[in-house]
Image 1 (cartoon, rainbow, N blue to C red):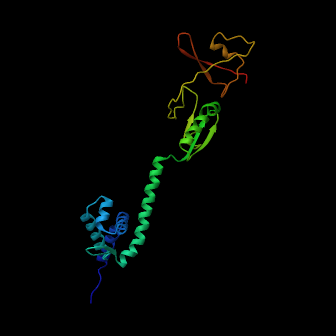
Image 2: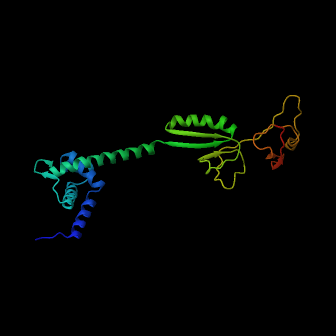
Image 3: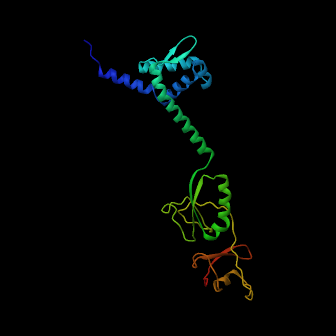
Length: 231
C-alpha cells in the first residue's frame, strides 16, 4: 500500500505552475507553429539546444510529453494539442499587448485639460491646438477660457496659460513667450505723457481692476502702479 505525500504533491504542482508561465506558453506556441525545433530556433534567435532544453524542462515539470519527436518531424501529443489551444491564446494576447504599447509610444492619446485667459485662448492657443491635432488626432481637449485664477488640482487641469510676470508660488511655471502691454487712445483724446497717467484715465481692463500694471521708464527700469479702469 502506498500513500501520497501532500508536501511532494504541492511542490510538483508549484513547479508545474512556474514552468507554465506566460513566457513558456508563448515559446511553446511558437515552436508548435514552426513545426520543428530548428525553425523555431531560427525564428527566435536561439540555438536548437536551448529550445530543446526549455521544452524538456517544461515536460519534466508537468510530467507529460508535449511533442512527439522523430528524426524527420515534430508533432503534438494529445496533451500537447490541449495545451496548444491555451498557449496560442496567450501568444496572441502577448502580441496584442506589444502592439498596443508600440501604438501608445508612437501616437499620443488621451484627454488634455487646458485653461487659458480668454484673449490668449482664442487668439493664440486655439490656432496652435488646431495644428497640433492634425499631428495627434487621438488627443481630446477640454478647454477652460477664463481670466480668473484656477486651481489646477481641484479643477482637474493639466496646464494653464496666464499672462503674468509673477505666477502663483504654488505653481510650477515656465515662460513660453513674451508679450507687451500697450495703451491705445481713441480719436480726440490726447496721448498720455507717461504710463502713470493711466491711473486716472478711463480704461477698459481685462481681468481684475485692482491689479497693478507694469511700466517701463526711459532708463529701462520697470515700475508698478495701480490702474483703475472705468469698465
